Amino acid sequence: MELSAFFLRTGIYLLAFILSFYGLSALDYNRFLKQGHTAQAQVLYWILVLALAYLSGSFVISFLFL
Image (cartoon, rainbow, N blue to C red; front, side, top):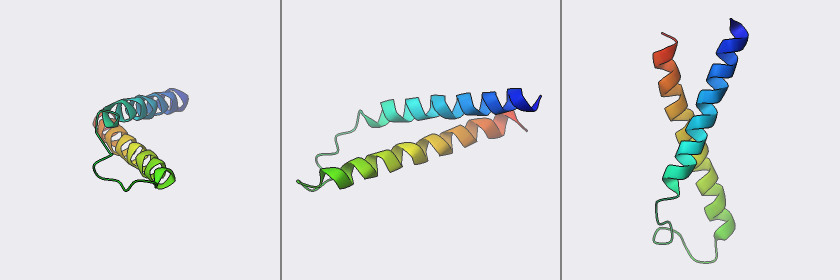
């Protein structure tokens, strides 16, 4: 039972990562970022994707494992 719960949680987090990556790609970041700071912009983008994936995945998991 533990192994199936692990795979379910991992799948939920991966799906949330893919969906958050897809959703954030729709935003135009050029208006909010300084020119010439591409490395910082990419780090910020990945942090936003990971944070959104973790929050949305935890939200779904909290409903499934009540």
